[in-house]
Length: 120
Image 1 (cartoon, rainbow, N blue to C red):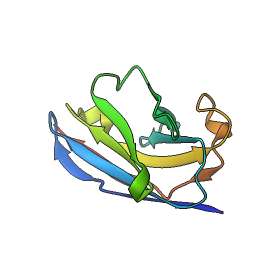
Image 2: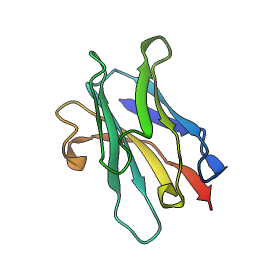
Image 3: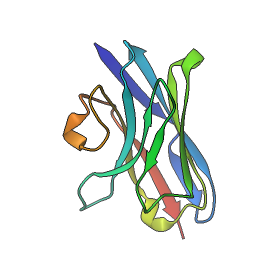
Image 4: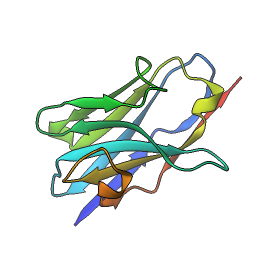
């Protein structure tokens, strides 16, 4: 079994930075991703990382501003968010899976989410 626990969300001003974390409990899977869901919108892909090699992938909307990383010794995945915009406001979810990052349905395990609010 795998459990994902997010932390680090909060309120930040536009242009600011925030790092959110995802602690992984249980066996290690191949892919870890961050998704977000804003009020009234569908959940969308943000970023993903291949645990073994550290390959990363990003949505166009966050490319160049967000960085996904992992710490093997702490079994934790991070999302560093820079140059935050009000439209980044959402609940951010950590997810894990073994097949691919390309489809949301390929992620088998999900955290409870952490709220990120960016004020203008």
